[in-house]
Amino acid sequence: MNAPRTRVQRRPVHGVLLLDKPLGLSSNQALQKAKWLLRAEKAGHTGTLDPLATGVLPLCFGAATKFSQLHLDADKTYEATARLGVKTATGDAEGDMISERPVNVTPEDLARVQAQFTGPIRQVPPMHSALKKDGKALYEYAREGIEVERAPRDVVIYKLDLTEAAAHQEGQRAIKIVATVSKGTYIRTLGEDIGEALGCGAHLTALRRIATGGFGQAQCITLEALEAMDEEERLAQLLPAESLVDGHSRVTLAAEDAARFLSGLRRRGNWADATEVAVFGSEPHAFLGTAHVAAGELIPGRLLNPIEIQQILLNAQQTEATP
Image (cartoon, rainbow, N blue to C red; front, side, top):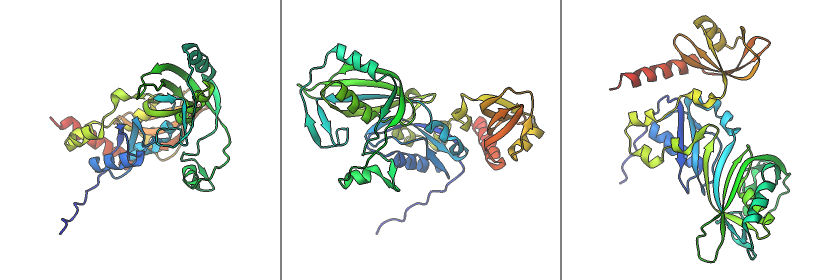
């Protein structure tokens, strides 16, 4: 007879966990595992990584989920390895080979293509992607053998570095791609397009996100390390919700103005116009939410609610009291 499953007692958890997503897990599977380990009531991630990709995946809990969109839109940096000479149906090593060509690539070729793909470019989204057509993901059409017309997208490759890399097997050739890109850039497609520009075709054999927004891989923790910790140690890994708005201008409000701001009322002050503002209360010091300033008015955006703020302050006091 099977033992009854232990029901996890959920609790309010607020903050950001920088996870180093492992190979083979979907972003949602990684999120659910971390949510279970933290016993969190509410959680979300800031954009997906393919199961075949590893690296920086910010996970948002509680109040932080209100600001996850900010990192969906953030620039991201990836490291990838592409095998030259072979195209696959999916643009990565999981797909069937669809063509093979000889490789005659020189360092000068890499420099030329690197310059060609740096800056604004256009990409056709891959069929093996989560983009939807008539409510259905493109990869579902692809599995059925159906090719759907996709409109090209404008994206920006802010920085690109192409170098020769060690191949998995003797006789093969590969390149390392390090790219800092705008929202909506498909690295598999970038690898395929670079392969075409080199005249031999290519597909990705490895993909790792090393940075998103201001977060880098050195700040991340693995699921294995998180699992080995006790509950207090796990909670200590969380960054505060305001870490998602580090690049915003800051405004601090006195208690009365803070209360009115939290109720959705605009505040007037001697502030310069700004599109992205992080707002804090002064007594006690607490993150209240985001806003923008126009003509001296602080106009509320996404706000925490008083219960969330109380929970965050209480958790901070308990953490400080822990020896």
